[in-house]
Length: 279
Image 1 (cartoon, rainbow, N blue to C red):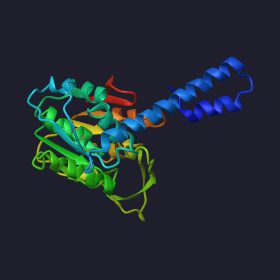
Image 2: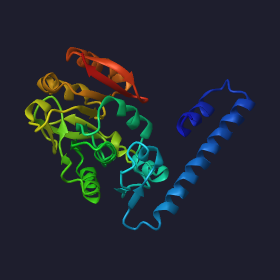
Image 3: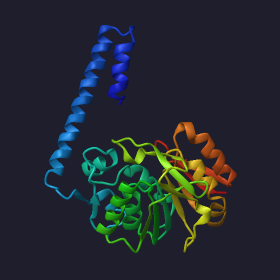
Image 4: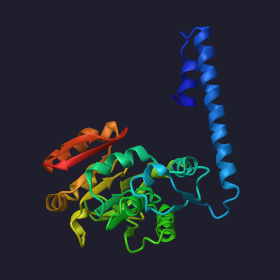
């Protein structure tokens, strides 16, 4: 469905619209507004008895994959405003479950995994509890979001499985600052390198991992090529399967970098998520 903003722009700016088209567009806009309000009402009803903002998910779709998986707890203090957190509450499931589950075919249970751009722990908890990962190393640069990630790790007693780091990953050790932070989508925050920034940036080649890494998820909102450039030795040594999110304006650079690392695209598994494997 198109956005309210785009509908309004079309209605107000296109003089060629006839009366019928305009009426239909206004009806669609009104319908979307009603749907948005109903969504907010559902969230309010679900949250009103959750003063601690802790929600339990126990979805049959992924329990079929691992019936022994216990109910999973999520601390979601921004569920009323943040898209990812609100979707977890409303769906009673991991955010973007179709994309997460589509990646299941590319690594085994008991894998060693890196989660770059961990947000509140959506993927990290899935890897640890549903896919029984032996280790997950999670990176989340935003301090307040990192605090939520830490709480979700603790709520599910995963301190011995998930190691969380409050750093960004890039081409080299440096600093960064927030370039954009959408209040309705904390996971869409963008960074830029800046010596005046207060966000620490490390690079993969400067890090030691106790085990060979089997799978890497990269969701870093435009920082993809920098992450890859900072991991030339890492990818050559570990040769993990890579799930990478890349939007159209960054895709060509990302694919060129992956190919320079002797990786080839295997499959698109989401709107902007791709699987690459070492050749």
